[in-house]
Length: 103
Image 1 (cartoon, helix red, strand yellow):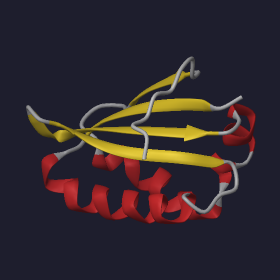
Image 2: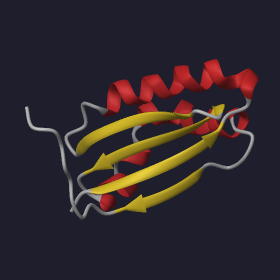
Image 3: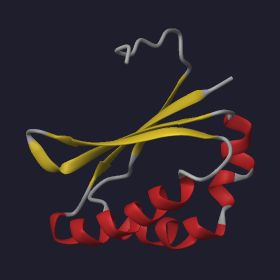
Image 4: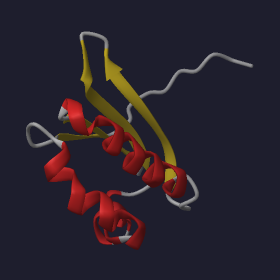
């Protein structure tokens, strides 16, 4: 069953460029993973250094056992504590309903 994560990042202002650079690299690669559905990066309109990543994957077990251990994530995970003003907040959600504009 698909699972969605919301991850809140409070980025150190002077480290925002590095944060965005590393995250862009992760997003550019993970979009090609077979279990990946989507990711959307949001910015808090009241605080440009507060970001929310919304990402959906096919299976929570795969995320824990496979995706988080991918080699392309190593630099990101090592750098993250120095880029953030506070620990990230992670929440997991299961879809109940999805509506999209028809096209």
